[in-house]
Length: 66
Image 1: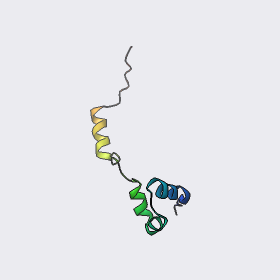
Image 2: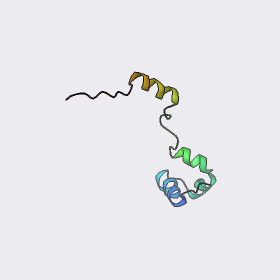
Image 3: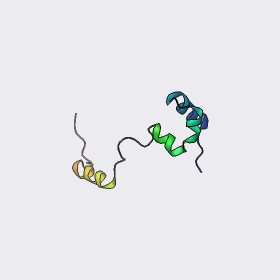
Image 4: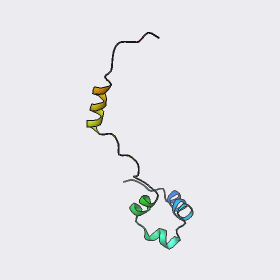
């Protein structure tokens, strides 16, 4: 079971989001994390994209002379 950083979440909710205590405690942890931006951003690279990059840029044993 994952433990929540309640002091950190309370600071983020009450100070960062400026929620009133009753608003903060009415939220589910999932709602609070969503409001804080958790889960936003690009999706991680999938296997198909990794395979595509490996074909485009194959590893080479040759060393270039510089």
